[in-house]
Image (cartoon, rainbow, N blue to C red; front, side, top):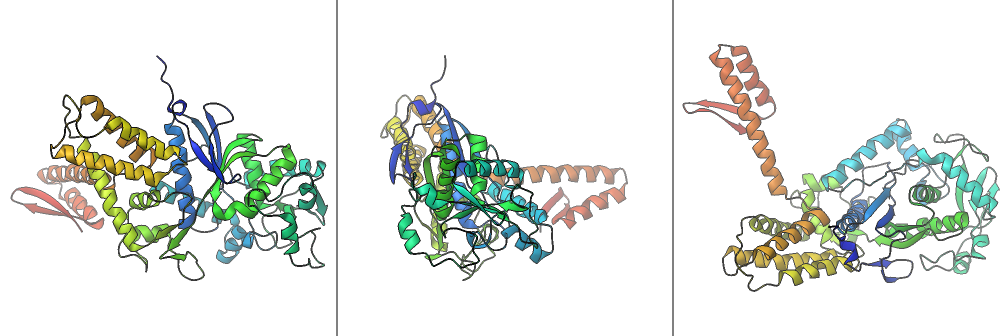
Length: 498
């Protein structure tokens, strides 16, 4: 008998940034979802604020999969074309870092792409279905520029190609995502200098002619140059998800101009709006102030994990940080502080203890004092309300209270309800929120370490029995080099970590 997917039993609502309200989610193709999220520009270690965005959309990805949807999740890597200050002029961020470190740009790209993957792995984020790079899609970008030119929404100027915003606005609405009015934007813009290649200040680059010193350049019909930052995402999203797809996500800071320009490019090239649901994750603050490298009010993921920073009293495990982020709605500002993280750690440990206790509980004839099915539905109601993870966590702690009552044998639970309680707790804690029981993980690592050292102790004992003292000493010395000290006594050999 076919199992009905969960999404057929649940009405999911998503806050759509373009309409400014929650809307019932209806995928373009039933049972299938295309989701694109703007990925990192890989010129430095990934910023904690960016991590929050990617963790938020990892949670969205996980819940959609949990509901039984087949999800194609595309998150790009920007490895060229993103200029300083997100502008159309200035130095390429990747190329600048390469110049400063006297490396090839692709060495910078490789280093910081690996860093990004490492950090996201620490946060237990699932890899996207496809992770395209901007430099891997230069041909497609040139082709879509030709289409936009043919459709009359762009112009060539001194080897560069610019999108004609005023021309586009004659028949479309430039500014509908960010709520900006083009006439107001024009009125508030300083006069263009005589050197500008643009017709109007609001126009943006689709292709830039490279200056002689610009390293990252490709041949095109207009010049040796490089693509515009906004264009890259239009090309990579539509190539893998189609000219119109379900969800586009990113940080709130990308709403204008990046996502606004994506909409304009998509409509100019394909004649239709590219995305049905726009989702934006909000920013992080640190001790009540905006995170900023220039003011020193910033902390990196590695500094968070190691405790090597000036803001927090101790290191925090990545899963606790993830849990802390899940305790705020993805659209709300989240403030990092030592007190908040310590409180989150206590809550996390309480949740994990309850999950472990759940495995030891016994079933009885009936359930007393708790409606498990209603509680389960409330958990789903929270996530169906625009992925409201803080409300979900509050509901999970209602479950924690009941588990502790069961542990104290002050209530009973039926076999059917116990199975439902286990499935719901484990499903939301591990599958949807993506948490990892760090205590359990450490215990498994310690068990494996103990087993490995015991094996080496036995091999050493065999070597000593065979008077192979060279091998015996080598095992002892090599273990000592990595901080494991063997101690020989009357009851055998033990070990300690140093």
